[in-house]
Each structure stands twice: as structure tokens, then as C-alpha cells.
Length: 243
Image (cartoon, rainbow, N blue to C red; front, side, top):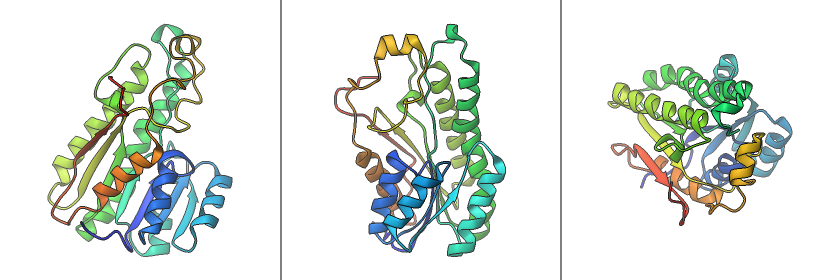
């Protein structure tokens, strides 16, 4: 395994959940982390906890200029970017008949455009250096869909397609990894407003779920591979989850 020490790792969606869990572990391994999210208060708290090897940049991934600024700030602080993890995402599930179009739009802006804007911001820098690693968080919903998750699943299938194509285009120099988590203990889904989803699944509390640390460990495993090895896809489900 390759040492993570001194790698510069940018993480979106880093103020809570799997992004925050990974950031904490990465700093203990000697990495330099750049935390990106919209909630500045939580980012400040995390940087105060993590110390000198962490900075934050308040970032809305649905805005292209914010992602450009994120990578710019990371390079200004640490000199380069080794890894970008496009992790930010939302999951306000609903049935099509409910017509929650504003929520569909937000998922498309964050889950799809956020990944594209992140790739666009960092790829020229990595290609110029001749090395780098881009990761993105999809979902098991990006492998198989089911009633009530159509738009969310569509965004995660899109992430899968984007990352597979990116890998084929840059496989000679840049590592590309897609993470497909199953149900995980996180804030994902807290913004569900659909009465039908709540009636069907409740608040998602009774589903088997993985700890955030499991996803963080998978990301660290992918990042720590030797220079000539790339982990393309990682699928994780909690025991008991069938879909």
C-alpha cells in the first residue's frame, strides 16, 4: 500500500457524514485535507479539530465558480491537488406522480452538475502534473433502481456513466474511482418531504445501515493503492440490505 502521508485531498460534502469521517481518518494518516461544503460553521469546527493540515473553503457544488475557487484555494495553500473526492449529494426521494420538480432540479444540480464541475476544475491541473486521482460518490441506487427513487437513482446512474467515461479517457495518467454505498448512517435523506416515501419507508431509520467509517475506510483503501494500481469501483452494502 502507498503512504497517504502528505497527499493533498479535496473533499466535497465534508461538513458531516462520510466526508467528515474520511477527513478525520486521512489527517491521522498524515494527509493534507481541504474541506468543502455549504455550512461554514461546521467546517470551521472541523478545521479547529483537525489542525494545521486542514483548511476549509465554503462551497456550493451546484455553482461552477465555487468549484473553480475550491481547487484554486487548495493549490494556493498546499501547492497542488493529489485527490479530489466529489462526495456532495442530496437524496429527497419521491414518486414521480407527486411532481416535486424543485427537488428533482436540486438533485440534478448537486448530484450531477457538482461532479462535472469538480472534474472540470481539477482535471487540467492533474493532466499538467501527469498524475492525480478523482473519486465520486454514486450509490447502490446507481446500479439498481426501485419505486420512489427514480430521480435520485437517475442522478447516481449519471455519476456512474460520467466516471466510467472519464476513466476511459484519462486511464493512462489519472486514477478514477466510483464509490457505490448502500444505506449508511448519515444526514442523507433528512430532506425527504414526500408523504408517500415517508409512508413506505418511514424516516429510513429501520433500514440496516453501515457506519460512516465503513465508507471512509473504502475511500482510504482506494487512495492508498500503489501508483500503478487503480480501484475503479467499490460497492458496499450493510448486511441485510438486498437492493
